[in-house]
Each structure stands twice: as C-alpha cells, then as structure tokens.
Length: 172
Length: 331
Image 1 (cartoon, chains in turn cyan, orange):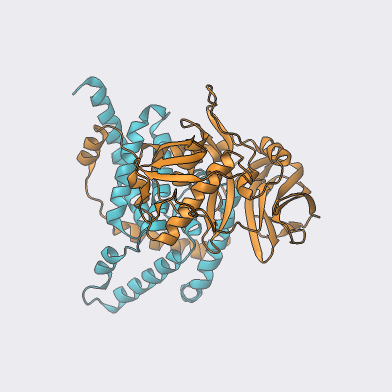
Image 2 (cartoon, chains in turn yellow, brown):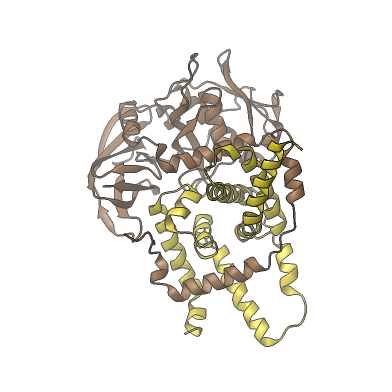
C-alpha cells in the first residue's frame, strides 16, 4: 500500500466510524428498509471518497454525505415497491406483556403517522427530530430554502398533531 | 445574536418530544453490519457510471447555496418571447461553440406533477457536461426538482451522448438508465421529459426536432421500442396550463418591487396570483396580473409586488390547477 493509499484509508475510516451507523439509521427511517439503506449509504460513501479532495473538513464531508444519502433515498423511494418486511418480521413476533404491547402500539402509530406524510415533510421531520439538524442545515441537506423547510415542517407537524391527537391527550 | 433556530416545536413541545422518542427507538432497532472492507474495496475500483449522478446532486446543492442568478433569470425570461409551447419558451441556445461556459445558467428541465401528470419546467444552473444537451439530459435523469410537487420519471442514469444529427436530436443513454422505468406509461412520460427538455434547450419553438432515444447505441430501447418511427412523438403529455417562470423555486431575491412572470394557455382569463408567508400561510398580496404577448397557444403574464425580507410562497392558479413556488426575499 502506498503512503497516499494509507492516508486515504485513514480518511475513509474516520468518516466511516463517524457516519456509517447514523447514516444507515437515517436512510432506514426514510426508506423503511434497512437492507436497502446500507446499500445506499455504501454507494454514497464510495462516491464521497472519490471527491475527498474537495472537502475542507470531515464535517463538510459528512454534511455532503448526508445530502447524498437523502437524495439517494428519495430517488429509491420514488420508484421502488414498498419494502417493509424486514421491519414487520420483528414487530409481530412472540407474546409480550401488556405494557410492551401498548408501547409497541404507540410506537407503530407514531411511525405510521410519520410515514403517511408527503415525502418532503417526512424528510424534514426525520432530519429535525432524529438527526437534530437546524433549519439551515435541513435546508442545505434537502437543497431547498429555509422558507420551504419552515413550510414543510409546519404542515407536517400540523398533520401529525391531528393524527396523534388522542395519544398526545393521553400523555397529558 | 443566537444562531438557534426556533422551529415549530416551540409550539409543539409535547409532539416534538414524542417524535424524538419514537424516531430514536426506531433508529435504535437498526443494527448496521460492518461494511468498511467492502467500501474500501469499492473505492479502489475505477469510477462507475453513477459518478455523474453524484456530480448532479452536487449541482443541485450548488443551486441552493447561492449560485442562481435571480434577476439575470428574470431578464432572460422577460426578454424571451412566449413560444408555441412552454418547452420552447427557454431563451437558451445550444452550446455548440468551441468555448464552453463552466456553468449552464437557467437550463430548462421538465418535470412531472404526479398528481395531475401535467408537465412543468424548472430552470437550473448546472456545471457544463460536454454540451448543453448532455447537461440538460443528465439533469432530467439525476437532479431532483426544486419544487417538491414535481418528480422526474427517471431514477438516475448516464448520458453517453446527446447531439443534433441530420436534423434529429440523438440522445444515447446507458442501458442501466432505463431499468427504473416500470411500465410503458411511465416510460412515455420519461421520454417526453427528455423530448421537451432538449427542444427547449435548442429553443426549437414550434419547429421541435424529433428525438431519437438510444440505449448504449441501440435504437430499440426498453418499453419504448424505436422512438424514431413516425408518429412516436405525437400526443405529448399536457403541460400545466399556468406556471410561474420567475421567481424560481428556492430562489433568493433582494427585497423591493419584485417582478413575477410566467405563461398561461390562451383562452384562460388572467391567472390569480397569491403571495403568502411560507411559515404561516398568511396572505400577503394578491397583485393584479397583466397578460402580455401571445405566441401560439401561450400568453405571457406578469405582476409586481413589493416584498420585505422573509420566506414566501407564490401560487398562480387558472383552470382549476395551481403552480406554487417557495422563495426567499433577502434584505
């Protein structure tokens, strides 16, 4: 291995360690299918590596990687059949105590409500409440204006509030 | 000044907490396998055909970090005569000269509104790839539209070449580019996205050139067959009856008296233009819209609104359909 190859591998290892798991989880949330999520993040990382000279810092590269993953998820989502079997196999198996069943029911309702949103609203909600990004970072990730982010967030939250009204009232 | 952005969860603390909790649980269920060695091995291979896709995504990102030239676009739009079809309304000319600009500004690219199956045009600023035709077709295949209402029927792909040959626009894509097309109806829409885009790039107007699609050089392409046969390009999908050309989606423009313009199918009354705040939906203005010159079945419309800094949505409606654009005004 040359010195340059070794440096590249160290760079890639650093990005991988920092971003692989979070990006796979983000892609899974956007796609509802973890097998495809790994493929998408893998492709995005390989593409990122080819452009490594263009990044000022690891943070810049990871920001770029996130945008790439979200774009690839959107593209995949647009054309593929719904892939849910991986998740649903785990969800329905076995007998569980009532408290766990209630928690699972609550979880499924929330996830179902999120997945029923239009795609952009889903992306904004996931990037905000899973990835914990700011409005500006979401705008950069999605390639839309901050105003559009606000608009999608506002509409998404309004729809979720309607869908989850009972649950929210129970929680008070 | 604080950089902390106040999100809507200021008013939705309980909902925000619920979403954080359940999304966190869902994410925690995912146990990614270790693919580092596989990824490392992939990076050692020569670049694959999807390399351009990444470049196109980068181009889309460039759009939102300020590469767009709002008022240049407006000037281009206002100077361009309304055309026989919106596809021909583009003022761009083909980049066939010896010196290629590094960026193609305001490249017309057609997308589909999946709710109505109507076609709409977006103007993109993209790094030049070989020539304007290749750049535009690559955008059709790879660049996600700015307007979230729209989609491309293509999932991604690579353009081998795109050029005018003997009075026809020959667009040669890799065979992999066609794999995402699932049925004939979708493939037809995808084909017309390219047809409308390349003719708009060439400013063909009513003299649209026939398009020949190829798959790795073969003129028989999946789901579509031979696109060179007579009549293939008859019965194109309908264009949206009214649309906004300026401002473009996600555009940032300076505060003041702002021009709005677009096209509408003749036979309709002047469209209704409504400007609202993006965040609250509060109506800001419903300016008077003036109809302009006619050309063929299209008529220009324009209006002017004084806006202060903020994020806005412009909605233009006619004939029961609406085209909306989100944009930002800076101080």
